[in-house]
Each structure stands twice: as structure tokens, then as C-alpha cells.
Length: 536
Image (cartoon, rainbow, N blue to C red; front, side):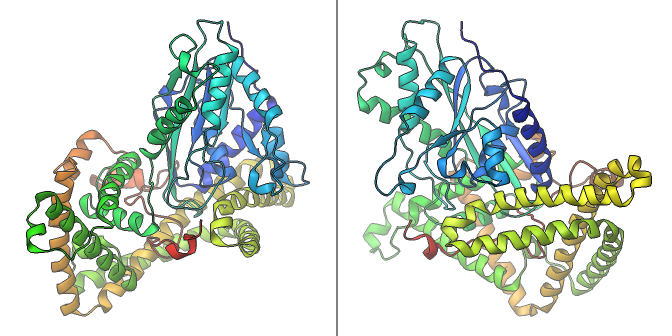
């Protein structure tokens, strides 16, 4: 009977600490299908896409409930070990295993045989090991081709345990989707997929000597699962347009979970991927072909959506402002309300912002210097990691200093300071949201009536075409009704004054109406230029 490695106190401390830090950094972290995680004692390899460096590993550690697994054995690039840094100490204290990468050893002197032997031993005991089969973290819109190391590791473990008929090993694939991975108070979706189960008895093809085609087959199944739960796009532009299509399909206020929002946007993304290279220069005879006609329609929609989003970005407004046009009197009235609410919230937040200011300044300085060390595609995947680490260290210093400064009443401030900082963050989020609404209304007021009328007409046409595409994609024909009945409590419209007050001033998290929100003075809808990633 398999045993397992007991959890260490340092791992428990790190899990508790970063569960707290991640909940502060990200506005909402939604974990789907945690019930599918094999329980402690069953050998399990947890695999996920890798776009956010150390943050991905911390997110998985904190997303796996202790009731399902006591711990995850992590892996990290060997260059992270042996440094006199907090990050290095953090990685080593969590029991992380160092892996050598070819890119760090140009001479080809890479030897992970001892590391793989340790992982085989851990899995044979019934532990859970976390691996990122892409092989490296990168800021890119598509998944990299998966390495075969996970499948080979599973094969080695099965061969080791071939005489134990009851042994089982699971490959648990997970999709991590960041709305805006490096931005404060953005949202994250963690989706666990049904685990792939392998046994020596039922999968003799994975026992030595193993046909490498079987290894490739396992890897292909892994890629299929991981890519099915996140955005896998050849360009940032397609993701940008797919999110716009999803917003037009399910407008602001739809009671939709983050998971449903990602799946809807992904459905449009997959449709646009198939037509992005379709030529619009076809003859009349070719245009009579039914499938080609549908593809050409989708390609026209893709280009028109891009032009529409470009215009919205140039004006600095969101689609919802066009969907529900307002009279100028109504705009002025709402601007007055937003301005009053903004000033009130900012006044209430000011004392607590004095505590947050050193944290914001420290993280800004650290990230600003770090991004100078390399190009976007080589540094942006570590921005969130730097913000988490420097935010944590500076936050502890602020808390310690504030408690020391109020030492006579330290027994009160030791708890009051964190509570004040948390409530300040909540109020400040609402203040920033009010500022965005105020500026968007002002820009809307500056748009000429003829231009506004024209783009409203264009939007009506786009909505009709998006809904037609949604029907072909077998999405619900009435998304607002469908998702309201399905239940999307994480986001949506308020219902009545009591619901408004209760949810607006919720201590746990801010009531969101748009999964695209971050703590920014502007709406974040654009991505880096695709040309910057052409060489990856």
C-alpha cells in the first residue's frame, strides 16, 4: 500500500502566506473542479500551462484544497537556487526540486537524471508532483509545444511499480487563465480537468520497452486538455477581438461566472482562428460554396470587430457605452454622481492610502528596474512574481513599523492596521472605478452626435452578426437569461437597494460587473504588439 511524504511546516507557512497575498493581488481567483483532484496517497502529476513564472506554482499550491492533497512537490529552474534572495529561500523552503534547462547550459551539459529519480521515488510513495510541460515560462498568447518529460516520468513510475497490480498514477491537467496576469486586482481562473489514469495492468504499452509513439500520444492528450480550458492563440490581436465578441454577446451585467466568460471568449477565439487566413478575394463561383461563404462572413466579422475595438480604444470608452446610448443631460447627471462618489471614496481612503503608498512605490521601483533587464517576452512573465514578492516584503515592513509606532496600543493596531489596509483597498477600487466611469462619460460627451449615431448603428449590425455566429457555435441564444438561471454570483447586476448595499460594500471582495477590470485609471483592453513576439 502506497504511503506519502508528510507535509512540512515551511510548506504550510508558505501556503497560508501566499494564499493571503494572492487574494490581495488578484481581485478574484476562481477554482473549478477541485473535486477532481486525486486524494492524498494517490500518485499524481499536476501539469499546467506556464505563463507567469513563480506565480503559477504559488497559484497551484494555494488552489489545491488541503482536504484533497496535503502538499505538491514543486519543480523550478535550477538557476533559482542557491541565491541570497527571498525568492530563492522561498523556493528551497517549499521542498522544490531543481531542474536544469538547455537554454541555461549552451554547452549541452544538462543532466536531470538524479532529479528524475527523486521524482520517481516521490510518485512511487503516492506524492503529488507539479510540472510545467511547456518547459519554460513565457509571456505569449499561445501554448508552447509540450515536452514529453511528464509522459516519460509516468512511464518510469509505472515500470517501477509493474509488480503492484493496484498501483495507479494520475496526470492531472490544469488550465490557468489570467485576465491580465501582471495587473493588480485582475482576475484568475484555475480549471482542473478530469485526471488521466494509468495503471501497469491497464496500460502495459507504457511499460519498458515503451514505443515512443505511446509517449507522444499521452503528451498530445495532455495538450488537448490544457488548451481546452484557456486561450491558445497565434496572436494577442485574436484574443483581444474574441473578448470583444464575448462582451457583445454577453453584455455588461450578465450574471456570468469567470469560467463561463472564458469559455465563451474561447469559443469565439477558436472560430476566428479557423478563418484568420481566409482570403476575401474569391470569385463568384467560389463564393457559392456554403462553407466558404460562412468562413468569409466570419472573416469579415473579425475585421469589422477589430476596426470597432480600435475606434473604442481611440476614444477611451467601452462597448457598453455604445450599447446603451445616453442623452447629454443623462451623461452630465451621471458624471456629477460619479464625481461626488469618487471624491467621497478618495477622502475615506486617504488615511489608509498613506500605508499603501510605500508598498506601491517599492513594487513600482522594483518592477521598473526589472523590465529594463530584457525584452518584453523575456521579462513580462515575471512581473507578477516581482510585485508579489516586493509587495509582501514591503507590506510586512509597513505593518511592523505602524505597530511599533503605536506601541502603547499595539494590541489593537496589530489587527487594526491590516483591517484598515484591506478596507482602504476596497474603497480605493471603487474610487478608481468611479474615476474610469467619469472619464468615459466625459469622452462620450466629447464625441460628435453624427459620429456617435453612426457607430451605434454599426454596433447594432455587429451584435446581430455576433449572435448569428454564436448560434453556429452552439452558444445559448439568450445569454442573460441562461446565465442568470445557471447562477453567476461572482458578477452581475444588482437587484434592489438591499442587494446593492450588501454586495457593493462586501468585505470579502468588490462586486464586479466586468471581468476585464483591474486597478487602473483606464480600461485595460489592449495587449503588446504581436511583432514583439515574432521571433519566439
